[in-house]
Structures are given as C-alpha cells and as structure tokens.
Length: 177
Image (cartoon, rainbow, N blue to C red; front, side):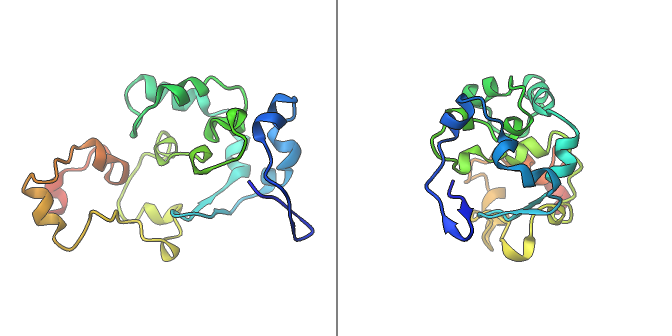
C-alpha cells in the first residue's frame, strides 16, 4: 500500500511489521471510522460505509459461521478460514494483513463476505447499491452475446455455485431464460 502525506508518496508499509509491533489498524487509518462512502478503487468499484460496519463490531464470527454451515457463497481456502478467528474487526474483512508486507487485492473483502448479511440478491438491481455500475462492467467476460445458447448447451461445464455469487441462492435458470 502506498500512502500519501501532503501529496508525497510514501514507501509501501509492511502491515505485517506494523501489526506485529502491537499497532492497531485505526492508528494509521483513523479517518476510516467516519467514512460513509468510501469508494474502493479497482476492478469492481465498490462503495462502502466503514462507519456503519465498524459500529457492528467484529463480523468475523458471522462469516466463519456461514463458512462452517456451508452457506458461504464463494470458495473457501483453509488459510483464510483460520484468519476468521481474529478479534480485530478490520481483519475480519481485510484478512491476511498480519502476514503481508504489502496490501494487495487479496487482502480486500470477497463479495461472498458481504453476501453473508446482504443476501437479498435481485440482480442487476441490488448490484448498484454497492458497485458503482457506471464505472465498472459487472457482467463476467464469459457472458458474451451467445452466452445463453452456449451455457444452456452444457459446453461450458458451469455449476450452480459459480452463478450464486451474482444471482443468489434461489435463482432458477429458467427465471431469466
């Protein structure tokens, strides 16, 4: 992660070293406590209300419970499942920073984390609540003009879990087609 101080770029910060020294995330990122419309740069352009979510406390147990109950809507890696045992509210979603020299996309929340609580999916209308749709194309690259014909032919070897992250658990293919 590259910080700025007075417009000057700082060297990347080793989150591992900072966190192992006993510092807390909010020691450096204090402004995030009041942030209600943070726009996350990157390919998905997500708006997020840190103030509201930090007010809920540590959501790691909620995410862990969804994983353990097999209700988590994404792939689960044993490494980050273990990281959900954190007592740090920030690291509930920003997992692995205590083991990272530089923050990367891997340390940002997964959409499936959000869907543990925000599970009412009405694609595409619910997407716009968080994703700045005007700035990003949410439709996967695989959804080409001939996608309906191709995926309904069985040639793509799709499985329902690959669809639920956007379409929700209760979607039915014939609901759209």
